[in-house]
Each structure stands twice: as structure tokens, then as C-alpha cells.
Length: 319
Image (tube, rainbow, N blue to C red):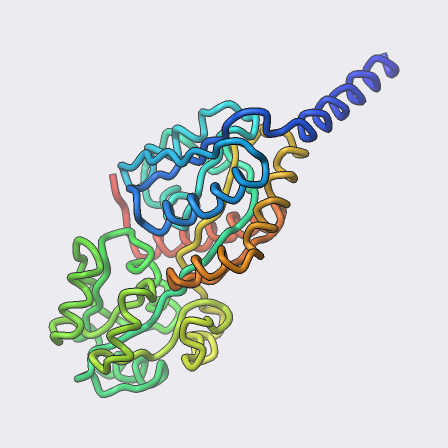
């Protein structure tokens, strides 16, 4: 029995290794759970094109939007675990949604990580009429005026909404949430003085900061962002341990053979070092990452735990 078991195990290892050497032998599909032309789609196409160039196989980006990313994510979860179907996961699908929705037809355990591709920093901005110029001044002013300040977000359960709820919980301040349908409304009312603040993805806000129409106090990653290196992080500016970003990374169905996952990860990391790819990603206001499957798996676990707590504490729930 020991010999038989050993033979079976050896056969499985050899088969997995052979599969990785042969992979890919046909087209690869990258599912995007959002509409075309958004950041998720652009990143998937940037990586997919370079994979196709390197491996001589088509890499097809398949947009399956709907239900806050859950439709496309479910489709990826139920795909064959052979490396030929990947998902460009996001902070929404693999950080927030499992804690936000009562019922999902997929589970984070249905996936294994390949590589974190990019992070989009959030920026903490206020309207020009608010008499604060630093994070500490904002916290002090909010504590002196509990419930009198408002913040906007692109919608309930969005990364911007939960990023501010995290900020509130870590500083003990009371701000009123005003949800919008997208960040265009947030930006317009912030500039117009109808709301006081937001913590949202940096790209639409930074030009208005540079134009002097709103005031930036800090950025949300653990380290400063090349998009605005002069701005401190929220952690540096007085809220130690604060970190909240929008992120994007490739995942595969959980049972995908490890040698194939490793090959996909190595290729993704190579692609993310290419100057033209880096330029395209930074042009989106994003920071390039590229890490190992183990590192990305650990990151996803930490994101799930963090946002589940924020959602529970803030009593946010979507059906």
C-alpha cells in the first residue's frame, strides 16, 4: 500500500509538472466582473496582451458585469481549475463583498491567488471652506462638531464608503455619510461645498487638487504614492496603522495545479516590470505591485478580515 500510495503521489507530481511545462496549449480567458474601459478591464488587457505575446496563445478578456462584481466572480469560481480561466479580482469582489452580502453563490475559498497587479491609492480631500489643512486638524474639528460634517462616497458599500468608515472608527469621529451614484457627484458637491470630505480613489480628485478647487490632506496606502509624493499617508499624518486602497489582482479557481499557478505568477511579475506596462498602469493613477501567490493569498485574507469588521461595526449591509 505504501508503494502504491507513493507511486500515485509521484505520478501526480510528474503530471502537474508536465502540465505546467505544456501550459498554455490553448487560449486563456481572463474574466472581468465589470464593464469595459474601467480600471479592472484596462489592467486585465494590459497583462493579457503581454501573456499572449510571450506564449503565442490568445488571451481573451471576457467582461461579465453585474451585481457589484458577483456575477463574473461566480462564473470564475465555477470554471475548470486548469489555468485557462482567470479572474481579475478586486478589493470589491475579494475584500468587501463577502462581508457585505448575506448570500453569495461563491466563496473566497473557491479561489487561489496568482499575483497582485496594482493598487489605486485613495486620497483624503476636503472642501476649501473647511478650516483644516492636516489630518489632525480634521479630526480635532470633527470632534468639536460631532455629526455636523458630511462625507460623500460613490455608493453604499463602495471602497470609498468603507475607507471613511474605517477612518471614523480609528479616530472616533462622527461624520454623516452621503451616498452618490458614482464619484462625479461626490466631486461636484465637494467643490461646491455641499459636502465636507471624502476618501476616494485618487485619479478624479488629484487634478482638482492641483487646480486649487479642493484641498488634499493625505493618501491612504501604507506608503506614499508616486502619484502625489508630497502628500503624507494618513498613517503618517496621525492615524497609525490606517491603510485602505482599491486593488486588482489575478486569481484562479482553487484547485488549479500549483505549478501552473506558479508559472502564471512568474509571467505576471515579469510583465509588471516592463516599462510600457508600468507606464500604462501608473497613467491610471495606480501603483504597480507584482507579488507571489503566497503573498497575495495572505493579503486577501487580511483584506477580508479588515473589511468584515468595518462592515459589521458600521452596520452596513446589502441584500
